[in-house]
Structure formats: structure tokens, C-alpha cells
Image (tube, rainbow, N blue to C red; front, top):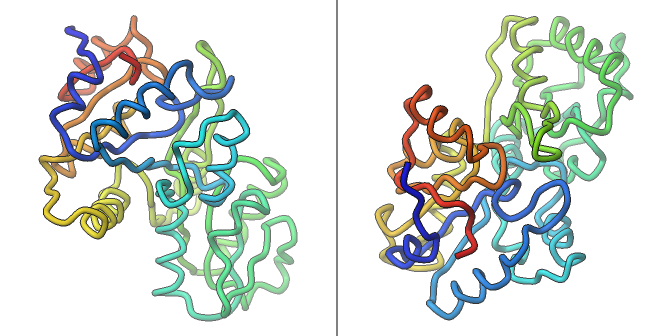
Length: 282
């Protein structure tokens, strides 16, 4: 497996899509020296968006998490979250009533509209669910995993409503050797129990890439998919999604895919990145 220099690769593109966790940051914070990379992007006139399956907080709150570590290159308008697609769906398809959700109060930001009430699963009364017209799975925190997942299953047995999964990630790394279960894995478990098909937003599904691509064309007319580079740390979300959307892709080895495992995983999954880089630094 040949490793490429990120800057040498990115020099050939006009726009870069970055995944967040595992590419820009990890459980310990911002990855070292990425400020220099973003300074280089600015000098070279390269534009970027951060595409994240993190629907736990609004883009403003996500940007603030970078600011707190003295990294100011990523502003809210540069963050595209799968939570935005969940909100678009609700705007189009669910016009009244209550939206129940699994997640934190911060994550419920994406559900707030003038015509919809939001209600955490913990506050749902299973004897009175006639007004609940949708369920959104946002984040792996903010609820009781035993009681509230059980309540979710029983809600879906009582109500035939759309279920939106705003983060399709199954896991996320908490250290170099450990991962935690993400809401995407919870969604798949509930989906199998109730025997219904949920509506998934986030990588690797095409909707997030199309949403970002439309933003790109508003920002810079004439940009085509061949001008965009997708950078991620996970083969089955970032790289597969980018490949399916017709983008060139970079797998970095700073997150879910470890250097010792990368070549074997690429061979076994058949998900082939255009390039492999140690990190976005260098």
C-alpha cells in the first residue's frame, strides 16, 4: 500500500470535503498541526466543507467545539451535518403534531420548526401517542439505553410513523484501541426488532453528498465532481459514500482505520480509496 502526501493530492482539486471525527479531531481533541494544513488551503485558494454524521449538536455548537481549542478555520457555514437532512425531511413530509426523538436536547435543534413539537422518548406516554407523527434517532447520548430503547420499540409497535436516522455511524473511536456504539447501530437493532425500514441520512448515503454538492455550486459556479476530494477515516461511510457519488477519495489513518489494518480492510471490503494518506498534515 502506497501512502501519499495529503497536500500533493489536494493540490489537484478545487474543493475538499472533510469528515470530522478521525480526520480533524478525535476523543482527545483537535489533531496536531492541522492549523498549518488549513493555512495552506487558504493560501492555495482551496475551498472546503466539513461533512459530518454528527447530529448531536447544531453547526454553531460544532464550530464552537473547535473554537474552544483555538482552531477558528471551521465556521458554522462550513459544516454540513446529517441533522440538516433530517430537518429538511420533516419540513417536507411532517407538517404537524409531535416528533419524538432519541438524543440530547442539543441534538433536538434540528427538529425545531414552527409547526412541530419535539419530545424526548423519555417523556413519551405510551398510552397517549396519537399526536406523535415521526421519530428521529439523533445521538447515542441523552437517554436511558434500557428504558428508552424499549419504549421506542413499543412506540413503533403502536404507531406506523416514519423513523429518521440522522446519524448512520455504527461506532466512533474513543481512543486508539476502543470504540463506542453510535446511534446508527442502535437504529439497526430497533429496525430489525420492529421489522420496518428506517429513513437513513448521512454517509454513505448519497443525500448528504448531494446536499453538500448543491452548496458547492452555490458558492463556486462551474465546480464539477471531478474538482472535489472527499477525505475520511472510515471505508464504509466516508470512502464508500464518496466513491458512490463519483468523487475521488482519500483514506486517512488517524481514526477508525488504523495503519496496520488498512490494507487488509481495503482488500476484504473491496472499498478502494483513490489515495491513502497518513493524515491531512503533510
